[in-house]
Structure formats: structure tokens, C-alpha cells
Length: 511
Image (cartoon, rainbow, N blue to C red):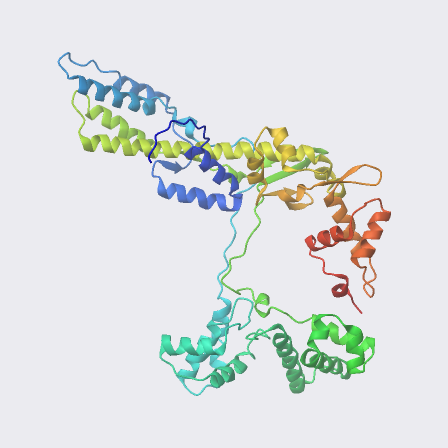
């Protein structure tokens, strides 16, 4: 049975302007230019350029032309209402000071020059491989097409991770070429002799083996290795071909017994292996379709004789303003509609112009608020971690969480999180992620609160000084930290070690 009821709810909703600001806060400086470019293309009322003209005289002259009109007594009420509404909302834009919507930042790096990243002109990794197809001894154009299909299937690391059956299907359906898996593998063997060595391998073992065998074949032709070097090379080939699992797991004792060799011989062979390239394409400057990611700092901290200064990167201060031509269009509309009723098309045109100008103002305001919020947040972080920015010593970092900065700035925690995410600060000690300065607190045995980053730094130092022939286990590391006054569990040591991208003791072992 249907029933009517009356209820009252309180909802909190973000305005479009607030949503736009939240999205802009998440954009790092490296991508801000692209975001502004997209807005410039989408909104013709927004523009960038040099200094504006002096609008004072122009605005005064326009104001004289835009004086309120006196309407005749015989005009209809609808006309009066329409005229009043249009004039009211036109005057809103006529009276605006254009210079107030021209964006400039006060806290950007003044000494920073405008820099552009040079784009090298070079062929891609796959084009480099295709240039070598002519050196293959192929029977006809059909086999050349197969070779090019195989090359196109090689990934950006230099590996062929597709099955021959998939390549066979591609050739059949896309190019109407019928072949067999045996023929594809035969052509692949020839491609695996291309430069760089190891290209076209299907796994790491094959990649390393190709590089070692290529070096051995070259030595057979030119005899550039002495007896001991050739012995090391042959032993390295035997290890990769027949004892790859023991090698990857660093079971050196098993290798010594299995191959009946000394530890010195094993060390020389392993030295030969570790000089190889596990990703053949990485050694080629034009490799892959991936664009190089450059770190662009969002903030710059200067040390002026012991006094720290904070600046926004100048790329955060684009020169934006509302297009004056759109204001001129509104002025022309007002002049043309004086003394008569505006038609539907004119009203739609004015509404369109108003929406575009509003959107431009909102975007400029959002960029300005983004600058202010970022600067306020980073300044709070700078003051909170002043000792670190002064000395560069990671052990000087204080425990700091998002709430600490939110309390200082008066911003919401989510806003601080958006600022800290994907942002970088340039210091005299290097460029750091803002997220690196946030850490939980832990208490020492003396009751002093220290940052977990300090514990990680000490853990890293201990591991770097360990005996690599007998690396320290997580339990040993926990005992060492405990003696230094940091009472943490073994599983916490393991977690911190993994966060530092340090492998387990067995994989840190060296001969």
C-alpha cells in the first residue's frame, strides 16, 4: 500500500568549482601545463598572454555608453522585466575589473629560467631491429614479412613473450601468409643474433644464454679472450644452461658441489654473468614506445645562509585571463538591444557568453586557490621538518602524519593528502617526494618518539655494512636494532626491509 511521508535530510554536496579545485590539487606540476592547455582549447573565453592593456580609460568610456536607460511608460511589464534581468546580469560583467582575473603567483622561483626539454630525433627500438632484417639470409619476401611480424611482437624489454601459434594466426588472418611454428622459430633464431645481444629471447635464461654464446662465438672468430677468461665464459654458459635454478636462488654451495669447482672459479663465472643485460632493449637509447618521465619539482627550497626560503615552481604560475573580446561582445549586445526587445537567439548568445566567462573565472580562481593551498601545505611541512631541510640528514625527520599538517594549516586531511600525492620538492640534497616526509611515530626504549623513517635509515645502514658472504637474517637485524634502543618485532623488520626494496638474506649473499 502506497503511503506518503514527510522527512527532512541534511546533505553536503560539493559545488562544481570545489570539485574542479580538488582535481587540480591532485595534478602535479609536470601535468599542469597539459591540463591548462586542455582548458584553453575547450573554453575560448580563457586565454594566456602578456600584460594586459590599461583598462581604466576604456572602462570609463564604456560605462558612459552603458548608463541605465530610461524606459517609456508604455512599455509592457514583460519587456521591463526582461530588460531589467539582462541589464542586471550584463552589468555584472561590464563592471568586473579584468585585471582581477589575470592570474599571477607571488611565491614562485624568481631565478628560474624557462626551460624546455629537448626532444631527440631518433628511430624506435623496433625500427632499429627492422633495419637489420636486410642482413638475414631469407628465401623471399614472404619470409621477410614473417621476420617483421616476429620483430613487431617483441616487447619493449626486448623479449618475445608471445607464443609462435599466436604469431602464426596473426600472419594468416592479417597478411594471408601461411607458415608453420617451425619456420617462425627458425627465423626467430636468426633474429636472436641481432644487436643488441639477447633480443628476441623468450625468458631470462634464454636471454643470458644468447649473450654468453654470442660472446663465445665472437671469441672463436677473433680470439680476443685469454685462457682464463675463456674458462670463465664456458663455466658461465654451463651454469646458465644446466644450473639456472640454483644460480637464481644463490645456492652457491650446491653449484660448487655439482660442478666440482672452487669458490673462486664460481665467483669469476658469476662476475661474467652479472655483467650481462637482463633487458636487452634498455641499453638502446631509442627503445620502446614509452616516453621518458622527467621529475619536475612542484616546490623549491633555497638555503640562504642558514635561512630556508620556499618557492613554488614558476610552472605553477601560468599567465591566464578572461578574453576581453568576450566582454566586447557583451558591450556590443547591450548597445544593439537598447530600446527594443531582445529576440531568442540574442538571449541564447548572451547565455553562452556568460557561461564561458563564468567557466574561465572559475578555472582561474581554482588555479589561484591551488597555488595558495599548495604553498600553505608545503610551508607547514617545511617548518615541521626544518632540521631535515637544513641538514639533509634523514635521521632528523620528525614523525609526521597528514593530521599534523591539517591541524597547522586548517585544511582538511583529504586536501593535504591531495597536495602530498605525486608532488616533489627540490632541495640542495636532491629532489624528494612529499610523501617521504610523512611517517608514523614509534617509541624507543628511553620513551623518545622517533620517525619510522629513522628506523628504516638505520636498517639500511646496517645491511649495507653486513658481511655479504653471511648476510644478516631478519632475526639478526631485529636483535641489532633492539640493542640500539629500537624495540620492534621481526615481522616489522621484514616489512621495512621490503619497503626499502631489499631482498631477503639468501638473495643478498655474495661470494
